Length: 262
Image 1 (cartoon, rainbow, N blue to C red):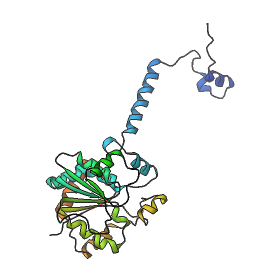
Image 2: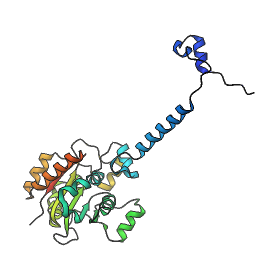
Image 3: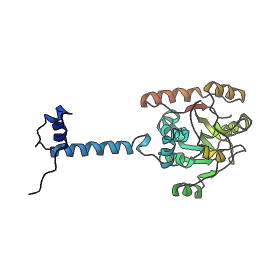
């Protein structure tokens, strides 16, 4: 007959350091139900961790950004798609996304019913996934310098959504880029921009973006929109706020809704 290992709790009790443990019966054994219960709780916590966040699925790049304390407004676009559909309705039928990691946003938009989507990546596509390569081959995603005119006709898209990209442009280039984004949209321009004080880009990526992100306040943006002749889309703002309230959605980035050029 095998010898049962000594009970460490009993040894502590004999030493007098833990009287509470010493009061436990030395021959008591853990219940099998307790072990099963612990396994179930552990499994639930693991599943909750893996599927936490928006949509229950997080890409490797998003996870890296979150771990480093950075904020990706392109990821915020993905979270906001149901809210945008409520606010813009049929205008979500033909969407152009402009910004880093546009393949992520385009893929999410294409999963929506009755929505076509295209993307413009302002920077080089590095270490892209097979899905992103497929979008490029199909002509749905392209690389283009947004400091120059976009290769699209006026009002080519019902909506243009831009994220992360404008925070890296100086006013000199914003003067050209923002009117150009409004030109190719028919029903509106939506801008996702970082809040002042947010962390965005790693030092290693400075060579890619050319300059650190400059996060401007909402008052700065509003004044700038007026300065270059862009009108705020008040009806869209109200619908977006109402949909956000119903869904308990709180964007991690600033969201601006602008009218297209007539």
